[in-house]
Structures are given as structure tokens and as C-alpha cells.
Length: 95
Image 1 (tube, rainbow, N blue to C red):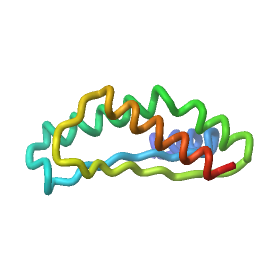
Image 2: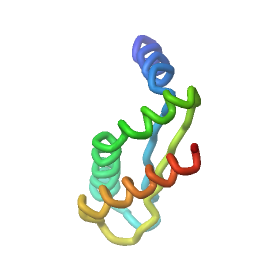
Image 3: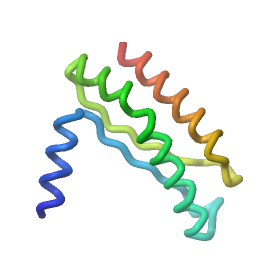
């Protein structure tokens, strides 16, 4: 219950909620799914500041959920670039 309060407070502070998912259809092993999710979360963590600032400036809330649909294990560099492009598109839509 305490963790739930912290999550609510954090989401109210930043006005952004974030999640990731990888389907079992293309990645049968949990190890591979977890690696992709870890890469996506880390990439988002490093780039989220611009989105947080824009949402705070506009005084709006946003829920974002990334689903990886590729068929091959990605490299971190690719994931980082794609997450950056997606965040820029989101910011453009918000404006």
C-alpha cells in the first residue's frame, strides 16, 4: 500500500506515466523479453526530461506505453534512437 502512494505522488508530480511491453509471440524466452524491456526503460529514463518539462509547462497529464513488435533482439543504440524519435513526435503533437 505504501508503494502505491509513492507511485501516485510521483505520477502527479511529473504528469507522465510510462510502461513497456514485449509480446511472447516473437520472443518465447523471458530472458529476451526482459532484456528488451530493460533497454527500453533505460533509454526512456535517459531521455524523459524533455517530455516531463513539456507536460509540466502545458499542465497536462500523459500515459505512454511502448510495445516492442520487432522480431529480432535490438541493440541499445537502435532502441535509444527510436525512443528519442517517438518522444520528439509526442512533444510535437502536444504543441
